[in-house]
Length: 114
Length: 111
Image (cartoon, rainbow over all chains, first blue to last red; front, side, top):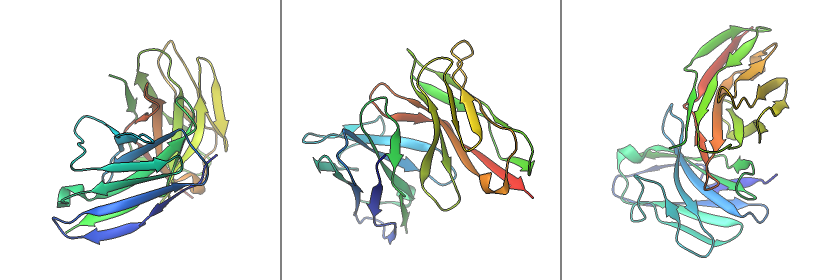
């Protein structure tokens, strides 16, 4: 299994600003993902963070709004840019040893935009 | 595209009652299937999984069987406890290694 930490655990941000969320895994993993969980809702995949190349975004999510970095096999960041209240959500990082393997999730970052 | 349909909640049960949370899926091929649980104030945890037809995943008294013929993966527990109160998510493994989640079912168990 993998242990995943995220920073910050929560933040309150003003409209128009940006926040970068960090995700650290305690072991090298093949795949890392970023999900969003809006209040009372299920999880929606934002993008797959690819090591050494651009992230792969799901429909409805774009790089300008959610730039992602993955400089190595244990670390990734997600930036929520030019925030609006609609971005208020929990953002979760997950990791897997490979396709078809179980995913392990970080504790999430609870973001509130005012 | 691939999708997961999960029983709507909330579900409220008395302690020691039998639990079933229905989950059906639509997918090309035979994806791995998962149940995740989110306890109040905590992160998402893998509860159990099954990787092929007729596999039974089990953990902490919970069970789910991968039924190819009915495209289902229902979660069951014979006797729930107050500590089982949580939100349960059914998920399938997407072709890109990601997970596709159902909407989640909130379970409340009363003493």
